Length: 389
Image 1 (cartoon, one colour):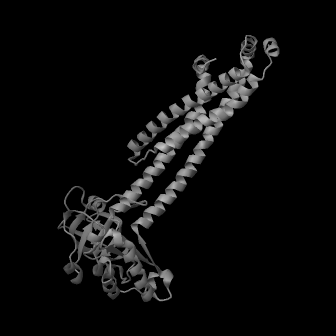
Image 2 (cartoon, rainbow, N blue to C red):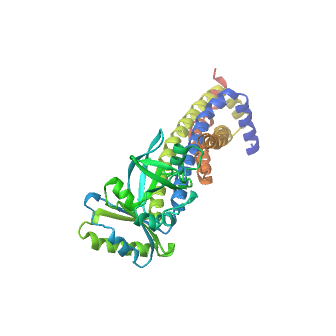
Image 3 (tube, helix red, strand yellow):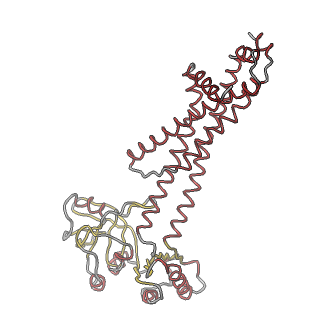
């Protein structure tokens, strides 16, 4: 019997029992769609975070200081770092949490105290007004720059530039508003206020520099600049090597990608359990089908059907069920992921290898769990099959 005829018989058998066939395929549909949805959301989130980190520039180094109450890094060390080979610009940062207020409207936001170089080092955009100058910092002028979310919270749709705000009860003049930078690693970059570093140190009553951002001359010498910075900090900190860390953007991106890949594998593995359960359902239904069609098998064998023909008939029927379920699952998974992205405004990233792998796995499950029922059918003796009631 030809393969095309066997496929037609399998499709005819499935169509004659539509509801049972659909319920049999349900495990495959859920399994394949779950793999696609979970992995696409995971990879989309990873890509979004990586893109946001990459927007800061691939030539950015971040130095974090720990045990900051007794940090050995002082302001005069900044000039030493800036003079290092491969270093283009340095931006120190002091940070904390403050309450900003405009009239009766108030909000608790993150505070960043820094210098004029911070704008270029962090690749910030100003939507209105201007950024700090060295004069603002040197003269300790009470000027402030608002994140876009903070500006909207305090002033609504009006332009806050030139207006006064209260930061922990002290009046500051708004000189600029940052363009929206979105959120990264679960933290919003727009719910913030920036002050000149010396002003922020006085406000926070803390002169300790918590971190510095370093811009390398170009992305090709980032590792060279990083080595120079680490060597210099090692001299400054002496034996306290655990009191600082130097990372570049690629290190962060690699870490995020590694975590995302692990999560994708884990989520995909969990979703594959549905495929296995679906395969068990297919085997169960195929065994029922073999029992129901025992006489048919006996008649076919009596008129000359070979063992291989019977084996292929039921095996192909199992594969057709799993392939139909896989195709429906792919369509449902892609559609559901897109719908989720539209509703939640979350980025998704479809992976063709993952889609093909999930569909192939559904076919493989159909083959594996269809072998036993097909083998049982092919080994029936014609006389016993014909006598079956």
